[in-house]
Image (tube, protein in one colour):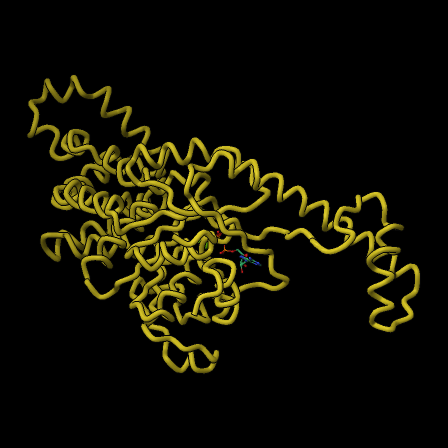
Length: 395
Ligand SMILES: Nc1ncnc2c1ncn2[C@@H]1O[C@H](COP(=O)(O)OP(=O)(O)O)[C@@H](O)[C@H]1O
Ligand SMILES: [Mg+2]
């Protein structure tokens, strides 16, 4: 096996059908997912990136709009314009949470009347927008759909911007808990399915659950909630089976989980816990992308301390200016030197934190480092500029 971490990530992508990019929000998950899918497409795969909250300009350059929920294929001309040789296809899909619930209802409602009743229900509208974890659940559900369509041989899943990387893995179970059949049954014709006295006995519980639901959704009228559960009951029948299926899909040997993280995150020292939890769920961590790091300057003078800008001028900035044959004003040299010192300090901090992080990482999990690039990444050129860092110098 090749030893370079980037080559091992490349191997990981080559040998898996589903890649899930997990991690807390803002670290570059969406960017990484899109970049990996593009690479897969360049290698000849039929790739799709299921993205959650792409930055507007990235969405535009992939050609996916804010409303959609349908896969869009990136046009060959787009690749040609960017000068890219893409042997396979790249597809992108934006998960719009509300739309996915609606789609779910449309797909599984037994009759058009039931469908309309659910879609118009106030409680449903609230639930589909605000239920914690529903976005994660929808991503999983959507992954199941893309998988069974049989149209893609590489599915890269970008996960919702959560606090914690585990949220995504827990979503199906949490939704199942919430939709626990017993609870649902209380709402579905409670006075008929249980006798009146049984209903009274349950009243406290039902009241409690209603209050909970009211807290979450702001809708608390019993009639509406009850009506919702009644019309949804046929959908719930299928939930368990679908959750079981996608959970198996997540545990499939052809599925790999990648953690995307940043060097200054507070959670870096929790990787041991995270990796344990993932293993316990039989969804082991297979690779780490450490994004937006500040690489340490390695040349002569790299050992200089931040409180020696004079030395930096003497040993680095001054000689560099002379090498370019320039007369550089001393104030400018001094500013450059201080800037350099500040950067080195950051870079040393990053390196230290990453080192500590790697100690908590299970053995054999490759970690690649991607520098903080001087520009935003919002188009195909930007996505390919990450390839050497993520996947090594591969053809
Ligand atoms: N290595 C990088 N260098 C420079 N900018 C980056 C890098 N990775 C991501 N970005 C930028 O950071 C922002 C957030 O990235 P994004 O992928 O949307 O994060 P997330 O999905 O984790 O919230 C985007 O504007 C993206 O272009
Ligand atoms: Mg994102």
